[in-house]
Image 1 (spheres, rainbow, N blue to C red):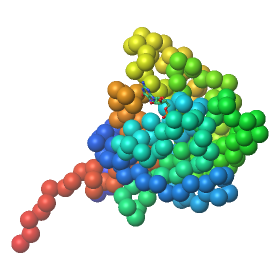
Image 2: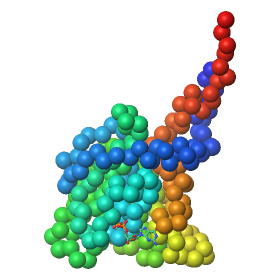
Image 3: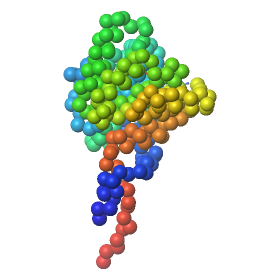
Image 4: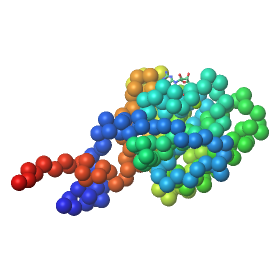
Length: 238
Ligand SMILES: Nc1nc2c(ncn2[C@@H]2O[C@H](COP(=O)(O)OP(=O)(O)O)[C@@H](O)[C@H]2O)c(=O)[nH]1
Ligand SMILES: [Mg+2]
């Protein structure tokens, strides 16, 4: 009777079926947008933030992971979207996680005061958002982790020590050879102590299932309900 739940309590080793994880990602729908932390609604489910330099491939990755062409707006003018956008995940009416799309940073053609304002908004969000349980840092592997990425990881460290999960997602993998990918992967793993690192290509659909599975597990630490895990043989009655 308790076998399934105790298996999960003991720490499930097998990964969720990628079809289930991808189906879950596909349920993403726009929830709300806000210019700063205190305008965001309180959320009582795990929230996963996507952050990264402008042009790192954040919008494209969100659209690829959710299998929706326009969910996150891939702007031709980087630095234009300065809002935090929230997307709900899970079946309609039973939201079980939220994705937060944060504006890209590091875009040169933004005024100094705008940059400062944005850094403040982002730091406030990353340090104070209660529902935040995981951060996906998108990084163009041809640039590697830049100073701003390092500063962000540094700011997050106290929360990571308290259990915040993080993933460095190396985007646009299709622009690198296999051996270049292997090299940057191992270098980034050294620099992202404590976090996960994955290669990703929206163009070639590389790493998509794996990231969906990881985000699913992060949002469902208890695993699948036993009823879905082990469908009992129906008993004929009478
Ligand atoms: N080759 C390639 N280009 C990509 C990939 N992902 C994004 N891009 C391109 O990188 C640019 C920036 O992407 P975007 O998603 O708008 O970046 P954002 O500013 O981080 O949201 C766009 O021209 C995308 O088409 C990828 O996986 N492969
Ligand atoms: Mg974008």
